[in-house]
Structure formats: C-alpha cells, structure tokens
Image (tube, rainbow, N blue to C red; front, side):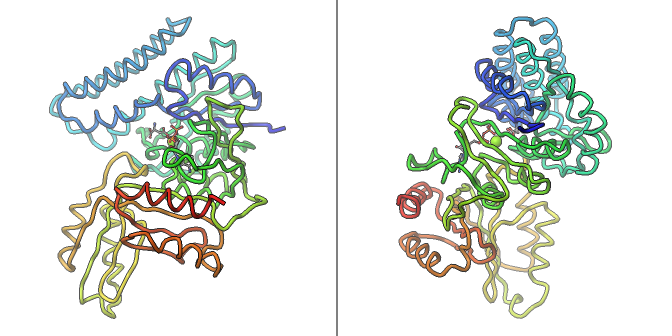
Length: 449
Ligand code: ADP
Ligand code: ASP
Ligand code: MG
C-alpha cells in the first residue's frame, strides 16, 4: 500500500464543476492521496497569456471576463458560496488591478504574476469542492515551498530549498487535511511569482512528490494513459500499459504533451512511479511509468511537434575553423533560444528551434539572434515544419531494426533527419501539412502488427 500519493489534475480535469467533482471522487477513493496539484481550469491560462500580450485595456478586460465566466459558473454549483466568493473576488480584484494599468507594457515578472492567477483560482475552487464532500481540505499557496530562480516564464526549481521548505511547511499539514495546491507556479528568492513553463503542473507535482518522499505521482488528464501516438492523430493509437522512465522522457521531449518533459526528472532521481490516467474514466486503468519495465520494444511510440523553425547557417569560414559552432551557440544562448536538432556539413549547420512548443509562456527574440548571426554567415529560415520522432529502444545499434525503419521512411519526403545521438529516438522534419499523413503511415507500418 502506498503511504503518500501526489495527484495532479490537468486543465480539462478541472474545467468545470462536474469535472472537479469527478476528480474529488478520485481523491476520496484513495486515502493515500494527501496532496492535490491542480492546473488552471481549461482555457484560463490561454486567456491570461492573451492578457499579457494585449496592449489595449479593453481587450484585456474582455479576456478577463472570460475567466470570470468560467469561475462564476463553478461557484454557482457550490453550496456554501460565501467564503469562497470572497476569496475568489479578492483574487479577481488583484488580477484586474494589474491588467487595467493603461499604457503599461508588462515586465516578465508581471507576466508570471498574471499567469499564476489561473492556478490560484482553480485550487481555491477545488478545495471547496472537496470540503463540500465532507473531506478535510485546505488550499496551500505553493509559493511558500516551490522555490525557483528568476527565469520568468520558465523558472528552474531549487530542489534542496523545495525539500527543506516542504518538510517545514507542508508535511505538518498532511496529517490534518488534504492539501490542494497550484501547479505551474513558484516564487524566486525575492518572493516574486514565477512559472515553470507551459504544461508545468505535471512537473510541479513530481517536484512536490520528490520533496515529500511520496511513493506515486498520479497525472490525471483527458486520455486513459500514454498512447503509441497522440490519439487525436490516428484512431490506431494504442494505450501503453507500462513504459520506462527514459522512453517516456523522450516522448515528452519530442512533443507528447500528455506529460511535461521535465516531469520525469524528479521521478527518476527518487525512483517514484508515475501513473497517467483519465479523470473521466478512472476505472479504465492507465499507464505506469517506472524504472524497470518487462517489455522494451524496438518501437515504442511516435511523437509530433508542430511549428518548428529550421535555420541553416552557411559560411566558408566554417571549413576547418575551430570555434565556429561555439560562436553560433553562444549567440543563441544569449537570446535564450534553445536548439533541438543539429546537423552539420563542411560549411553549414542546420538547426531546429521549437517555436510552438510548451517550454515557455513567452517567445524568445529570434529575430535579434538571426541579425547577429547574419553578421558572419548566410542565414536561411524555413518555418512551418513538423518534427516527428520515432521513440524506441536500441534504435542506434540494432541493424535489423534500423534497416526496417529506414525502409519505412523511404517513401517520406523529409527535410532533415537526425539519428545516432540517442539510442531511444530517430527524428526528422516534414512539412506541417504532411505531418498527420506521415504519422498515420508510420504508425501503420511500425505498430499495426
Ligand atoms: P492536461 O490539461 O491534463 O495537462 P494536456 O492537454 O496537457 O492535458 O495533455 C493531454 C493531451 O496530450 C491529450 O489530450 C492528447 O491529445 C495529447 N497527447 C499527445 N501525445 C500523446 C500520447 N502519446 N499519448 C496520450 N496523449 C497524448
Ligand atoms: N496552466 C498551465 C498551462 O496551461 C500549466 C498546466 O496546465 O500544466 O500551461
Ligand atoms: Mg498538460
């Protein structure tokens, strides 16, 4: 029997009162769940991101009203609304005060403050749903324990500080009540609010599980586990019952948004089993992610990341010149741009940047980096590409497997291919418009046995 489970409910799982109520039943049915991490109600973070981007107060207020509607619809279904209305109205008033400053361009710190309101509202509402089901629950401000650096939009957690703060401030509460807290949100050393990057609530749950020595992290979402590919792309996708940490980490990194890419880091460090299931159908089981799994097939899954940008940098200077790549990566790093795939030839380098991804809430300044790069090499930019990754085991060394894979890929019109750096993946780029067809073909060849 597990002693302590941290359960995380994603945006669609807490989208409205009925969804929250289903999640509350999951919590009630498992006494080991003592910590509940919630995302913002579905759609709310997107509205908050819009607010940070709008310059007109009118447009910001219109998005704000969208958030009010979602929030008040949940309150309308509650029984004891006095205290909760007060708490919610205080939060909404704080948000409104920030976003109604005219002619104001938000700083990165203010943007994170704004984004945090989604989870602050949903956690408040969810603890009330639990209370109304006669469960002792409290809403805990995660900023007391989720210590991060000051990289707003994609803050790095400070593992040792989180552990210390959790044992001082969170553990003592667990014997008295279920603690409901916010995913995605943290605070820096100056107590300014930070966020962990889009989709970061999964990561928050895993970080808290690590700090609290939990046995299991449960990720409750809108699909009944991790599939061989995004089930929205092909009806042939199959749910995987058991998958290793490293395979799941590769899937997440290459776009399987069912879990945030960093989620498995704390789980691996502390050997905590991760469960992914559907809050709509908890009885349907789900996927277990663990260190040791019985089956390690050559092909495990196919992941897709759309809206990739391919940059090709060309310069005769690169021929035999040491330090050319260093120069390029130095510029990209100064502009906070992370690179995914890299291939090189004698005088050129091609690299992909993830532009539509779930890493940070704010986009990096690519144009400024490109201007700097164009001072010493020819720069060409292609957008509208999709990165497809085949994830599996020993893809780098097994001759038969690689041969089979390449013959499947033969018919695909691809722009770039990367293979060999990891034994767990083979990645390539295709045009966005062709991606789904390619995934369907590939899935049929690799998994339809
Ligand atoms: P939540 O709001 O619960 O965090 P997300 O939308 O972030 O949920 O993640 C769930 C979604 O991930 C699913 O609806 C599905 O479309 C998508 N997804 C992508 N790849 C996979 C995969 N391999 N298996 C399952 N779901 C996947
Ligand atoms: N609410 C945040 C987002 O939409 C974090 C999360 O849901 O995991 O990105
Ligand atoms: Mg998610």
